[in-house]
Length: 490
Ligand code: BG6
Image (tube, rainbow, N blue to C red; front, side, top):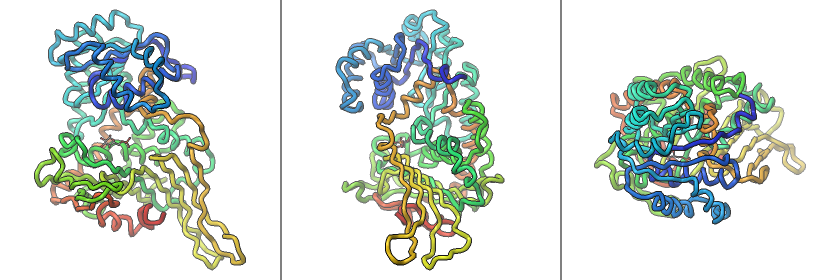
């Protein structure tokens, strides 16, 4: 695919199942508005929002506007752009289990095989196969159709395989867009730019020079109103199986031969398949589960997970997980990748820390600590390279200083939200930032034994106070092979 093809958009219909849902209102519709506002859409396009509630297009648009005013940045919301945006939006009430109800949608889509058609399933995963079957039986799937699915894709290897098999009955793999919204974040794409757009890091990016890697996705949010989903999902399935493993894979993969989707996905899959399985008693030493108790987050009192609405009494669900992962490869053998994520933590911070090995021999009196590369993805996008320099003054004393890059200062453009990029790529037909079925199943193959061993050894989540950095056991996990978690030395 040439660069111009990669960026070109043809006329399209975006059929948004779950059109009245939270994700659609908070992220997907605002993302389309931003693209329209920046004149990035072709002249001819439509959003056909689909949901169960009976209402007219006008009523849907009113609800969408209310959400848009909340979720679109004030300085980006323009009345005249909004007025033209809504001309492209229609609403269709459909009970997706009633096949006769697809008729209205079918008429609206018309017989237009060359037009790009994206079926975006922003619904409960239990509905995915029913909707795919519904659109197929209604004759709506054309050669230019695509289907986009939100995570979670299954809750273990077997269920993920079953969903993928059912999808394959209706769509080719090249038509299926499995979303991990982390891959849509510009900051995550910048990881690839950093690694494969610079000659500086690649020679150092290996076991000979790197002692350990830490990847943190810390959230201040608690379970909020999502207990129904979260209490039988947990942090391992909700965050590690997808977002954290995707970050690990981008950091660890071999340079792909091109940015072509197959080339990138092949390298990613290899990393997932090289992960050392954590089985049996190894879960006791290589993983930490946690669950938050009451505490203070961002100055506000937060009640314990167990006291949250919708959480089962005495729930054993984890809201925090830390794992020591290892990759069996020439490049990474012996380098621990410490992964952690949790809810109701001290800060919102997504950050990668690469700790380099120390110098072999010091000629200075002050001990030189190892160099460190810090890549912060959220809330700010910052890259820091920590080096050592002689401080001002008479003495030859080394002090750490940072070579800092702040992307907000470097680029004056608005940072796109992840879904803008993902939606545009689906419409263009570029799968680079979407997961292949083998990636999803390989990730489950690594996750399943951890869950099985937790059950087997009855590993209960360790308590931690909301507003802290997680259970004490997580510090012990890194203590032997790293100089502590990042917050301990910044
Ligand atoms: C989602 C998880 O996939 O990612 C949520 O289901 C989590 O539990 C969210 O809060 C975090 O995403 P972001 O973009 O806010 O880091």
